[in-house]
Length: 408
Image (cartoon, rainbow, N blue to C red; front, side):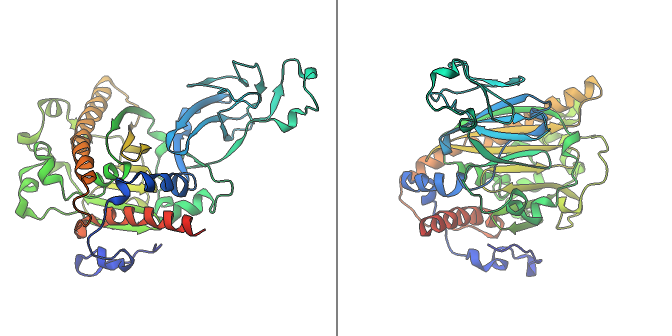
């Protein structure tokens, strides 16, 4: 895929990326168990996957575990004595028991079943009755490492034996244009999880375009957006390798119409667009709004395969889509704010998190029916318009990765 963006002529986006084509697309990649089996190895075992942020591993000895169904893996992330965050397979080298569950802080990792003790760098430190083993060297039985790296406070792993790219190379210039965004200052977090009866890409598609907004979100958008003749569109789309970006204009002025707001939003001056007042977090990087949209509102950075970072300026959302089968997935959603300085600010944050959750679940509520209808397998060609370029891109990139893997 292209790794460069040039402003498209006459407002056209799709035609500016000719490798995407303009014809109808198939969603067979979202209903096929056979494709899912390939996708697990071709995509999720080879791409860099975000598991957490550094704030979740704040001190030496901090650890957390993550089960990743799509790769049939259980991992431990550990904050080492040298300050480095490492990842290991969560499996004791004795007889395969999990070394840890959940999260916490310990000076070493101890398998509850066998008593084998591992240092924070994964080396085997102690074995009960070591003399009873045969030709045994502790240096041969450390935890199995997983490639791990950090960008902008986001902790990524790669399960491939030899990753084709470093994390920064994989992310590319469009995503790393956020290097200077102050993620580390936005540490007040609200999160929730939804288990969905749909393929992971079907939910990702819901946040890749705003064409559906006037029809689906009628209670939470003003009249000028609800009008089908208004021609509501996004201001900027951008592709960089396997990653995607959509930015929209926005101003709170037109979002304050009382006829579409909940009373709690008016009372707290917070809601769908977040708190109406946010702390000054300093200069924002140019990479946040590469299209130069004025007035800028939201930029959604979609990092292949399953991470989205939606930035609203003074706060941001984080989404992860974790496949659990060919037609189910786990959706993780996180809202990050500057730590509240007053009780009122705390209430503003909680209201925003709840309203945003409802907005997302309006999309999620359509997914089971969409998946079921696609699995009827009556239609295999679906037209997508110029504002749905990112939908076209995600499905093409996924197919490209699978085909390249098969060719190898």
